[in-house]
Length: 119
Image 1 (spheres, rainbow, N blue to C red):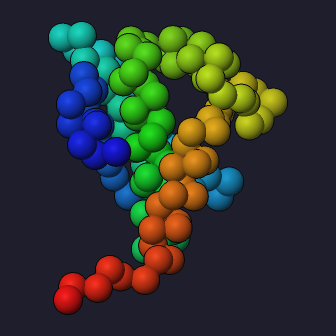
Image 2 (cartoon, helix red, strand yellow):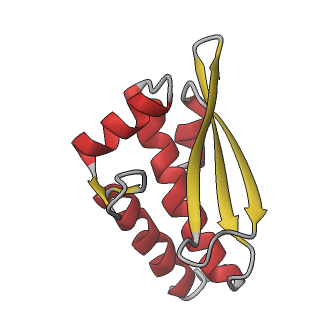
Image 3 (cartoon, rainbow, N blue to C red):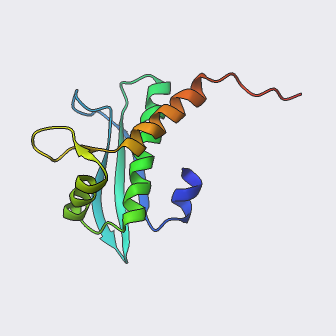
């Protein structure tokens, strides 16, 4: 995912934060400058390290979705997730995608896998 983001037209800031209790991570649209979207990935720092890594993979997948769609503002971000995802609350300000959930499962599986032999 990181390789793909490095080739994409997007700037992603990652930070550990104290998030509301219902959130373990989130992607926030910040701005667009020079045709590049800027987003902030926030990971709740109260989680154990492995769970933070899982959430990072999840949120980086959302960043890829944003880059692939050429998102330019908050309204287009919401429109994207109405198309590729689904609302997770009644306000329709929080969205989810199956691809991000799959990315989280992949990271969790990688974390649980035994290390490769170095023989």
